[in-house]
Length: 162
Image (cartoon, rainbow, N blue to C red; front, side, top):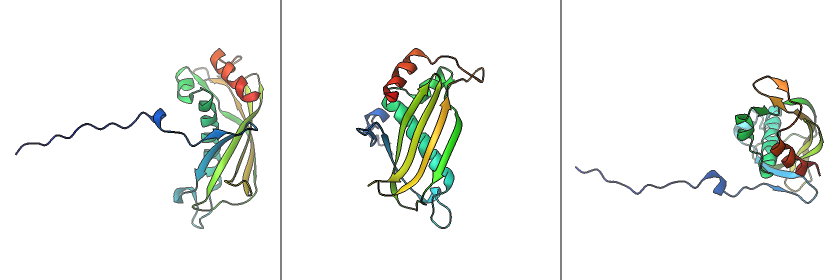
């Protein structure tokens, strides 16, 4: 019995897959989400912690859209942990609902980054959550706030604060 060989097929690189995210004319980065069963409780309502995960994903993708790859930041020893967050839940989101996480950097004060975020229906008529989130740049090895951002990161972040 001979073993049959098949031609090797390769998936395209991740970057070749077209993103479904974009930045609106008013500076909001828009990141689409859909609530799946693992995001909800037994009543089919999205668990409150899921919104936090979606907001973090939107911030990470917003940074990636301006050339800051979070994985590369971690490689050079820089991190942006959340140090403060204020949330307002407006309306529960349910299983199977499509929504958009809108995020924008409201202010950059040195190494402190203040973000506005909201999660709303695709058509913008329903608001589920609004948040104000503050991140600060840290040296991962030292576990301390850094005094100055790496120059390439600083230059890229200026794009978001304009």
